[in-house]
Amino acid sequence: AQSVSQHNHHVILSEAASLELGCNYSYGGTVNLFWYVQYPGQHLQLLLKYFSGDPLVKGIKGFEAEFIKSKFSFNLRKPSVQWSDTAEYFCAFLLTGGGNKLTFGTGTQLKVEL
Amino acid sequence: AAGVIQSPRHLIKEKRETATLKCYPIPRHDTVYWYQQGPGQDPQFLISFYEKMQSDKGSIPDRFSAQQFSDYHSELNMSSLELGDSALYFCASSLGGGTNYEQYFGPGTRLTVT
Image 1 (tube, rainbow over the protein chains, first blue to last red):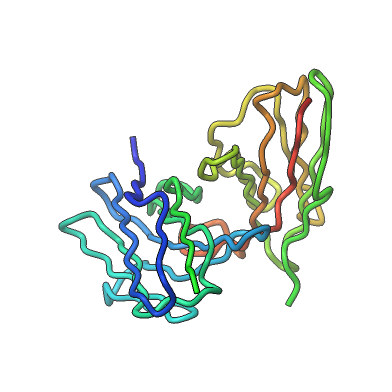
Image 2: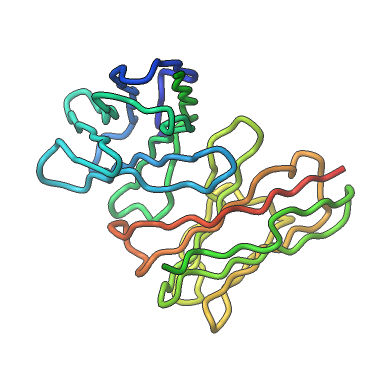
């Protein structure tokens, strides 16, 4: 079955530290990939997405992600985190030609300390 | 900009009762998705509608039903509620039912079954 794995369930960083959250998907075909963020008490918001083309995608708030097809990975990065980045981050994918439902990873809770 | 509206935001029901959750998509969006997020879990796709027709179905219990109305709003009806149905229910909407259309999420309805 298709699935998404996020390796880090809880991450604690100091402000200005660099961030990398891992995401691997399990599917042999073409997928559309997403990172969503859920701030405390708020709804899911799209950070960035990859459909095709340049495998390095840039999103909002200084986030970027790199799609590495050979590794089935779509890791999220940010060079310097801020306290306001404290949130839960979900990796997700859509199967092209396989309907329009998002399959989410289990999420990574990021806490940024001052 | 207008966002996805869900009502109610919070709902408390007893076992074996019924509940109706409502979702109002972003204006002109014709596709609605329902997701269930249990405590500490990732969102799980339940069902989606495109142009008032069911377009995809996920792990939705038979006790649940949903529909999309002529004004594109959607309702999720849940009967014979069980304790395990306690979760955050997200609705998302998109313009178009294909896989390349971004899904915008609502704030969710938190259902507590006692």
